[in-house]
Image (cartoon, rainbow, N blue to C red; front, side):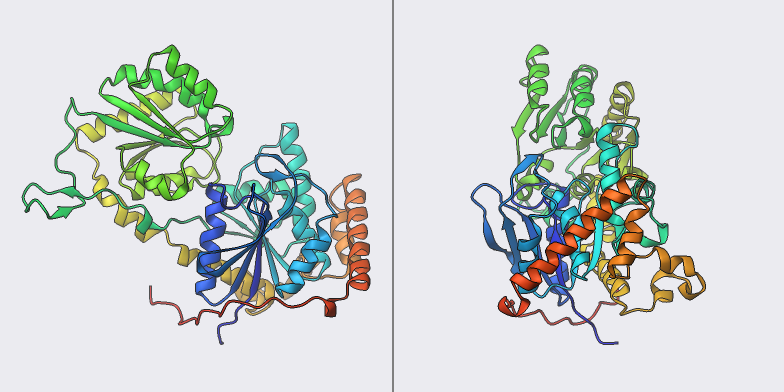
Length: 479
């Protein structure tokens, strides 16, 4: 079968120039899909003076729509006002598949609703874990159930994330695939170190000698300074770690509301010569920070995947991380020391990592090649492309889902493949006694807005945008 290409719109509030895991995921996935011959655009909100249409490397076209940001880069939910602009972009760019990212992205949730009203295929990627008890999680889960009741397929970045999303949105597990994040290993190489047995100008990525008991060991932390990232845990652990290991120092990069508390801890304990605060660091400079260290400390309280620990291991750092969410799935045990999300255990785990490095029991110089073999954005793009083929009918349902769906009539009743309004309302009506009725009302209003736009602003009056020349797909390599 010839390689079919698609026109894809990635939609999320979280994208460059803001740094972060979701932002990097969207950019790298879009770039690799373009390399495979697809057309990919990104729809996000305006960032400061970055408005309108911008082009990024590899011909990625980015639409920065003018919506107000209310919290942590998420836009104010308008539900319907985004639809006319979204419709115009979709028609101009001849989009076939809308791929939304992140549960907390308002643009993503609204775009998936509008895309289904327009009769487009939809995919959603979840990058986060949420609970079931607090008010914010309950509201988010209910909205996610509304959105995912009518999508074609869901992608999660880890098996733990899949279990969480299936429970939160009451999904059929067969509609959810696990495709992890990846890392551009070439951008996260360890520092080459001189080999004492070679000429002075010849360098090898091998340590010149193991860390001695009096050598300074550096611990690196790169994270947003928020509660869920374990900043409170970090603040409590740093003085104890430095007390137990005098020849140790910290380099901390990142920004957030917890930065003030971190600065106060440093002043109270007089640790200015032991803790270096860098503030926010651009993603292209992350590697330069990481290679200054020996240990990477990741005290997160919840994490669906944790791309930063893969980047750290690729740079040759020994990783100390909390065993929460999908983190235990990310790296093999010889690259990591796991801790419970508790102060005492985090201090003890960091101590074990320091002792192992000083005793030369860990060969961190081998980590880069091992990570390179484990994670590849090209592989992520291939697997995502397979999802697109499955929802578009380019591969058989039996092949895509792994069983003969014709023998399961209930499966057809619960899928998001039918675009008719009455079938969509049936799916939304099952979202709750009161919520189901509210969701149905939203869908009806959305459909009426769509009909009005089709009448007031006909498709034949909207010009098609000229595309970049598509890359010629040469086929998959044997690996």
